[in-house]
Amino acid sequence: MTDTDPPPPATGPDVIRGYLRTLDASPGVYRMLDAESRVLYVGKARNLRARVSNYARVTGHTPRIARMIRETASMMFLTTATETEALLLEQNLIKQLKPRYNVLLRDDKSFPNILVTAHDYPMIRKHRGAKRDKGSYYGPFAGAGAVNRTLAQLQRVFQLRNCSDAMFESRTRPCLQYQIKRCTAPCVGKISKAEYATQVRDAERYLSGRSTEIQEKLAAQMAEAAEAMEYERAAALRDRIKALTQVQTAQGINPRTVTEADVIALHLENGQACVQVFFIRAGQNWGNRDFYPRVGPDVEEPEVLEAFIGQFYDGKEPPRALILSHDIESADLMQQALSDKLGRKVTLNVPRRGEKAELVDAALRNARESLARKMAESATQGKLLKGLAEAFDLPAPPQRIEVYDNSHIQGTNAVGAMIVAGPEGMMKNQYRKFNIKGDDLTPGDDFGMMKEVLTRRFKRLLKEDPDRTQGHWPDLLLIDGGAGQVSAVAGIMREMGVEDIPMVGVAKGVDRDHGKEEFHRTGKRPMALRRGDPVLYFIQRLRDEAHRFAIGTHRAKRAKSISATPLDEVPGVGAARKRALLAHFGSAKAVSRANLADLKAVEGVSDRLAQKLYDFFHERG
Image (tube, rainbow, N blue to C red; front, side, top):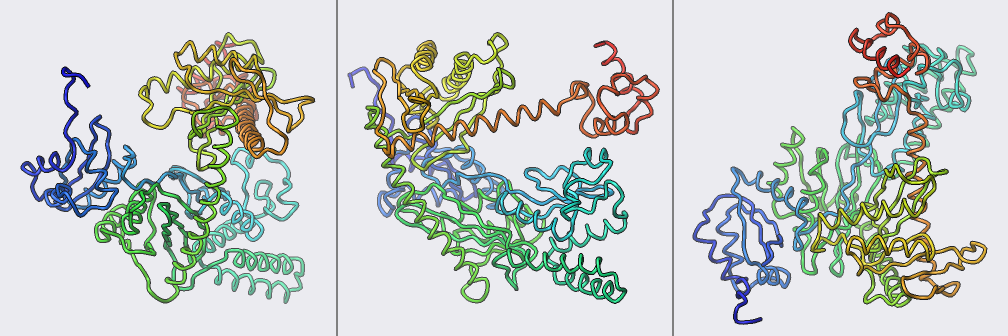
């Protein structure tokens, strides 16, 4: 530091104390920022002056809070009308800003539901995301696996269709689902509308927790069929009762006294946390899911659990009850916020005895075991990253590895894929796909495709995080290819001024043998790792995962292009009108040949849209 350099900005309790003059007892949210204006912490307060005065004290803080106070160079405040508003604003800002000293929920995926569609012959299917489609929703389920198992079991019992409306309307004979007794084939009239509606009502009763009522009804119908000597129908009903019993057995923990709740249990150990959530709906266990929020070394259960609940339900509908393993800091505010969100009362309960306590114990046991497995996997991952650094002369074990691959068929439907791995394994929420846009690329030009992918990737990084402070810059690039590919990528990186990121090309070895891979680096001779080396297996897993992701993305794109029709290009023709046109004419080709009068005759197609369709196809022809 020279005499002309400005002094570093002041930080610590004195800076915080300076804000007390302007604060009153209002509720609100505060942000603590470091010398470079990065947000360190976001907090809420019933009384902003009282909360900030606590930080102005020199002693009495945990090591984490004391460290945060020492780094604080400025603060920002926003008062709110109510304490509940402060709680909601705090959680929104934490999710948006991801401050270093806050507890942060890192896995924020949506949860799937089962949808029974609004249709004369409703279908039953999995649904994820916003509830935009008309129909009845049941859930949430813990994951796609739980939904798929339940759907498969429900089809055995209630035999509802799972085909799309377009397929349903175009069928002329029953499909395989009818042959294996998973559907009653309403598409070709094998069951009446009234009988099918009864099946739908029974399925919805079951999903609403009224399975005993359904079993009694089926048993009575079976007895009637047997008495009337309708033995085939009686046998079919017997099979449905048996399948329903198997469904109930497969559900696992089915509480007797809890109909709708999320059971949330937290286990903390060695500065790491696992939260286990059991989803109880309609008196049935619809699966469980574990989460690993980012926590500090000296946080306590009430703070972690409150932060988890606030962030978890920020974009999700809460159930009527939350059954918790620990009390939280602001239970009254959280209960009020969730009740306002749901539009009816939500209760928070920390049970000490009875069935609810048994549910919490089961969730806690799962949380302990899951965290133990996670910590063991992290230790193994740490050793692999250290071995990777030693093998390729990296300055330190990489914290973010990006692996790139391309997929296409003779240059068509080309996609690039990027997967990411780090100390905690595969970081699937960081995976990215790239639709190859280059019109001047020769079909199958892998070098050209890789150039486009990396150019787009690093242009975005340079724009969004030029100072490399957000943790999105890789420490190592793995490229699927040999010396030529590595040289091409190195040239791309030089053009963008990014030459300090280590890069390794992974080339298949002699006879493309798995285990004889060669590794290429700029300016160095090719090398190999000994067969059986754990680091070699690790690299193979990374490459295979990138290949799997690229292939899956390519297949999805190809499937979409195969199902595309010229109707997709006509402005104003959405999914419903497209279905109506295809059902009326039989094919997109027939639509293109139709005259104006025939187009106007289609239900849902206005005179204006008919004219637009007619002009679109005839101008093209």
